[in-house]
Length: 157
Image (cartoon, rainbow, N blue to C red; front, side, top):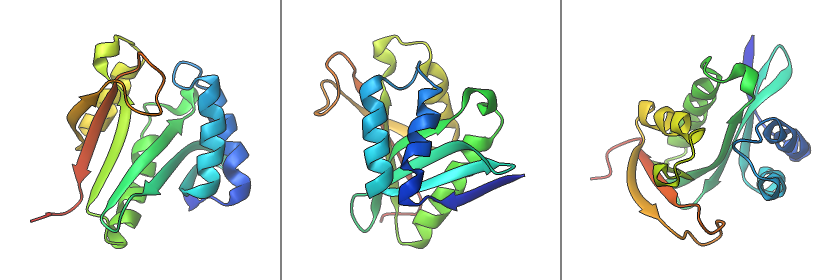
């Protein structure tokens, strides 16, 4: 049975471990950032039969804007709705706190990196639209253009 809960500071190492199982998506330096971010931002863990299989870390940017800074589901469970369930749960929680817009960054398709094709499809299927590509994005490794996606949770007019 799938369960989703807010992570505690001690779950930061769990997030790091889960990311290590996805070397096509996370570089070695990402692992330190994931562990750090899990300890300072809002973080959720999805468990299947009490085994962690997915995490999502979100940073509240303002009263109405949040950014998903990390989302991962272990390879075995990708494509089975776990990430969607986790994302839906988190978006519902964020909306209840007044968040109106959620953003996420991903490696842009112009990088030609095939593993990220499924990532882009994931965000688009969940109502996120790409609004920009930034290259170079401050803080990202050179040669990694950032696709900027956003989703409106409510009308902003």
